[in-house]
Length: 94
Image (cartoon, rainbow, N blue to C red; front, side):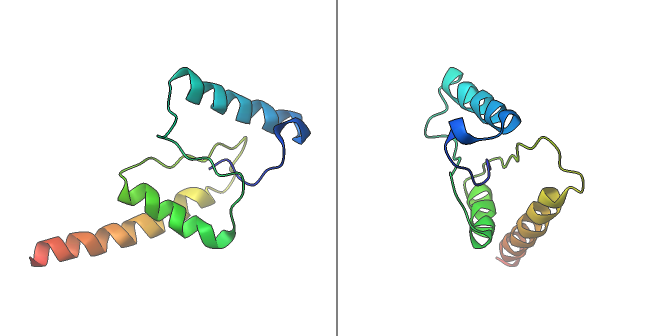
């Protein structure tokens, strides 16, 4: 999840550098169609993004220069484990 941003050229130096590196990696490994990096998202969209990763067996990454508390890990775990538990419960009952 790249976060909300404006034009790359108007971003702070460190942020622009990280985004440019990510885009180059996508290009170097021809990952077009395999990755998503929305330019904007709302707080409401985040749960749907986590669910999409789970449903498509994808990998969620949060490229950040620093994540002091680990909130992303907690959010993903809470949503993914909750959803995963419900799916496993249904499979076990069948």
